[in-house]
Image (cartoon, rainbow, N blue to C red; front, side):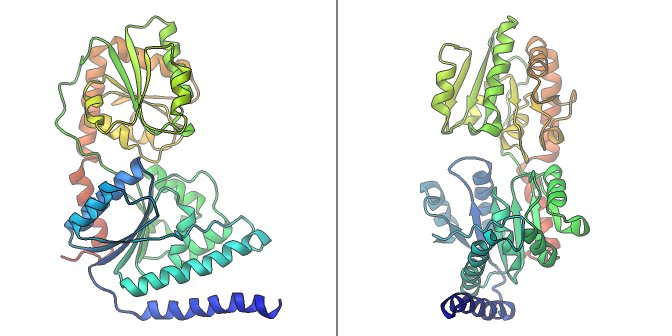
Length: 406
């Protein structure tokens, strides 16, 4: 290695050691939180971020939010002003992804980026002096290196891993995951997958889950809401939400000459126009696009349908339960954890179109069954997924970490 290359490596490494020692020794501000949240324009991760802001405000924390360019829209700006929270726009947001082989040449650039990213966030920590650093993201593994920071950390993980992490990520977690550093996710299914794929079987107590919530208005009477049976799906139009399968099920029901019905999908996505074109001659299938008033659709719906290939929780599903809707869901990830087959809805096996159609048809033809499942779904919502329950569980979680101010 020549002298110039040695300097390129040595200076950041010495800086890292110096900053690490300074952070390790600094005195934190007891009510200060730094929150880095990775979320899109719409969706559950953004909804959770907004709820997290409110929770931290009500618990008297002083928060600095780290945002990517483009995340700060009018709604979030108004919230930050209302809560008197500060923010920073972070142009280098800190993704670091390792390949499987630790000593592969392809890991050299990620290692360089890791060092520079740690230096950047160590400087942020020194400037803000937070009592806790919170990461909230649906893109989980690129932020695992935050566990190296010598500070209390909460890593909110909103997805279910489906493959083993790179070895270097596993080593980071094995060394640095501790009682001061917790992984928090949104379902038992997600927790189990994290433990399995991140090889945390010996430190399972540091991985916990708290169900997300849905804040609902008072529901209408459960039962026949329309002459035309409406089957609703809410979600981003993306492959793992399974929109092609959704269309196949609707067409299968139509071929059976089932009672009058319509399928409605609420949600944006790059493929929205493409799917509208696919069903332009089928007036019983509607891709509505984005709407700010999802509540009105829940209230005018008879059955909720979620055929996803992957779901770590399901905000929209719980929203349907909060409105007393019988739900038909796929057997993937957290969905059968929330919907118990033949108790508060039906669970079908992907990719069985006929099985999904059979179960929706049964509900279309039976008002009594819709009422039975709808009441059971609403009861489950009240017992597990209200905002009050989430606030209580979050407070208990912070108490265990000894982070409550009051």
